[in-house]
Length: 390
Image 1: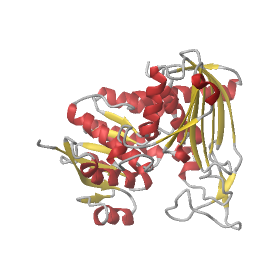
Image 2: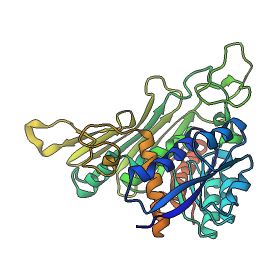
Image 3: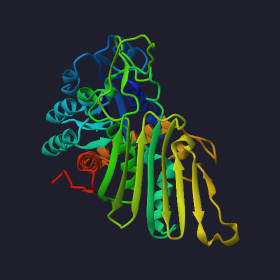
Image 4: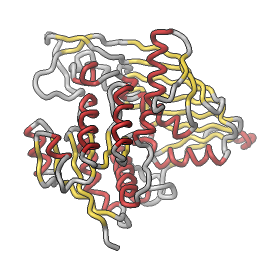
């Protein structure tokens, strides 16, 4: 079989830019049946040190400072947008106008209206798109969906989604772009609640109305000097600036299928380090999954009689994709393996000419929920979810 070459540009070599770059290098060995050969052509980053690393450590053919130069290159077929949030839209616009396929990390816009504009641009230019809601690619999450669709837990009655993270829990954590409205847009509702909502859409379906609240626990942070990570730390005596977006949000919701739902998200809680989790309750059983235990799914079956109680299903090569990384049962896979799975599926869709999901349309579905939540902060009442694609 002749593999099709796909030239890749990565815009931003931060954490996720590095993860997707490693995926491109790993995919041919992980998925020997793949129908393409990914080639890391060009990395765009304003930081000279990252540009050096892109070529030296990741194998990019070249690195440039201006992302316009990368997206317009004739040897680039697909663009990965992995820069800070508020750069996503101009990068997507440039790539769309250049006719390149686009995979963007979430949120594809820091504000709902920017996500809608990105969707409009890609639709106008007939661009294939993908979005990094990568947790839906966890093998046991895929299995959970199949159990729900098979009726294994009966009719779904309630969903609980949450993403509680500690990345912003340190009062001396630096005031990086993630905490500024002009550079990041909204806070946790864009950054991590988007994962919870996309997961709920994947497992249960659409949401029709919401009501919720927001809060800021840490209102000021030390000012950074130079290029800084949001895991960086200042000193008590450092000058501080104001946090401009929310670090906690919660909402109640109703789903199209009649189920109720609760969501909560925070970057300032202490305890849950990366608790991206869901619980699905049905008339005949329940399911629960937590990123902190990526390779375990909890399954409750009411008809087990005297033996009722949650059963732990361990990950293994009997579930989709898992065997590409580790054979047998209960041999764990990790976060970057999920990134490799989604990149493999996105690149496969490009070769086959099929539509990849989640794409920009699904991202608009997520921000349609986010916009209803934002509206409820002001109205302090239930708000309908309006499809922003229309």
